[in-house]
Length: 149
Image (tube, rainbow, N blue to C red):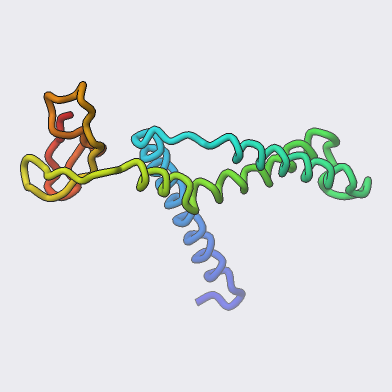
């Protein structure tokens, strides 16, 4: 066993890499869900992100000349100012915006034609009288069969 603590540094750096890989996989799954639900960001979120950018850019311009953010001039202040709008978007998407929109867009549950378990569906209109419902999922989450709309 190493006494200088390098073993613990290796373990924690490995856990850091696993954590980063899980975040990347989760992000891909989240964007897949975003595309499947056809979600878009409301205008007020863009306004909030714009205000956050202006506040952050103003705060960066007030930094002293020897601050690390001023090392590369205006470009570094601009890029660092994008952090706060990114946080605004992240919190809106992760903490409820997309999931709440998805839950409210789903009005009914229709039985899966293969297993009979309820699957999220949207109600039909009179022009779509040929089918009983439009399934939101492409596959049944219970039995895995492909659902046709």
